[in-house]
Length: 314
Image (cartoon, rainbow, N blue to C red; front, side, top):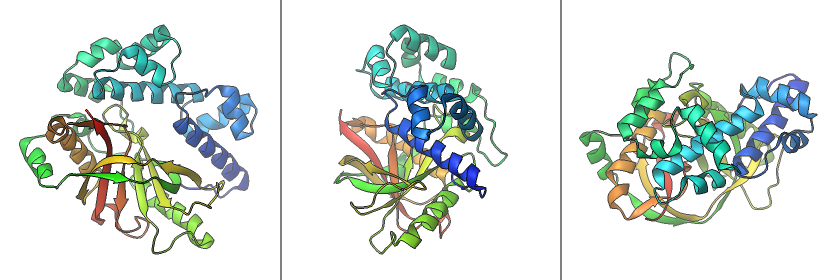
């Protein structure tokens, strides 16, 4: 969702739904009832469900359930000390029985059994999920293989991974999905078209891409990507570009160039080639990339970027 419709009515509906999607992302573990979401969109609940389904391709209930279950799948693998019940509560499920039924329906396995799976077995679950994207889309098995080869691991070990403490960054953003080959470039173009006339882009501006989903538990075409620019503290919310904070904290960082596929491959290698021996664990499932140049004006794969992954002591 990065290109604004030309029709005024459709554009208004689009922007309202985009506002709701940003709210869901920031409040996934909280109250995201139909009444609350429709009020944010300023639609009746009936009309909101209809419009949401047109733009998102899922009903609000389906969308929220999927995001919660995919987040829990990450938690179960990344945090072995976290109980299934705690993971469910942190992701917005108030009833363990409701969560277990939903998880088994989605992944065809119970949460406890899922946690005991090997990475190869998890890969088979992932590659069995339908992939309805366009022909350019990579084979999902490439992303679902969680065991990088020795060359990938040794390549990452030469990337000079550093631990950095970052201050929080206020950013304006536009979200898109990776199912579109030009999604990243187009979302930065849309953001740039909004920001430049408002004098929000200058020599101090930083261009940031946030990976909201990973194709290990999310169908590739549904993986969300957030195009961001840093903005001053006094910049307020605007209906065509939302505002959020990238939190301060400790991040593992490495430099790279390449396609989005190369980014994901390096993240897998990072997880299995460095993290296990580092004394750290991943703090949150979302990381970000900081670009040396605006991806609206230069091909994504040719831009040098610094990848940041939030970490905490293991």
